[in-house]
Image 1 (tube, rainbow, N blue to C red):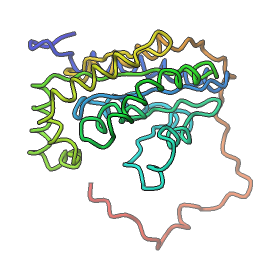
Image 2 (tube, rainbow, N blue to C red):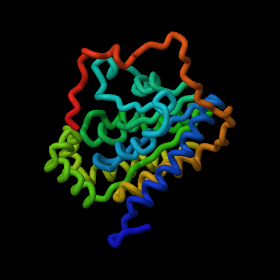
Image 3 (cartoon, rainbow, N blue to C red):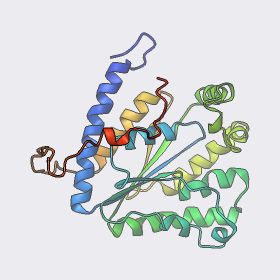
Length: 264
């Protein structure tokens, strides 16, 4: 199961990932049948592995059910709205799971550390958000919150890899390098956020993410644990034969059309 350096063997990881993704497909059927409304929040430092974990969660399910929301910086109009207003527009309807790749908790993290909000705005947010989330939950929304915790050494290694690899350079955001300098500021912001918003009705789950493979498996397993579900009975499917009514040579009919050159 493990390599000499303690990492999961690829075969074991892929076997476990497939098993969990099969269960996610069963969960998806249950969510649709029961009309559940689910929100999953992913937060963490830059380079913590949120994107890869979300891909592992969504790559085998329907995007019509599991919908990822990653909002850009707010426009001037959105800045004039109630802070949480632009997030509400993306909340799930019945039969949907909405995954926030960063969320309203930007206020307690990036905005706080980078000076994009005032101390008064931050204090108001931390005071009000537990009550707001309690209201969501009482209205029937299942809310799951993950904080991905990456070590200083591993974040530095991942940033160096992004700098050196042209395939990964797009991952470097304008916030990434400043976040390295402000490591302890982010630590203090994280701790203040957890202290104010890690409640019994809406808890935070800390996901250690130095080992990406383990983090992905642990995350998927936790989601399946937190949302009770049952396999949905489905009718047996039989592939129908091709009808010969109106048959014609539909292969020859493409002769002379532009085909993509087969270089590989």
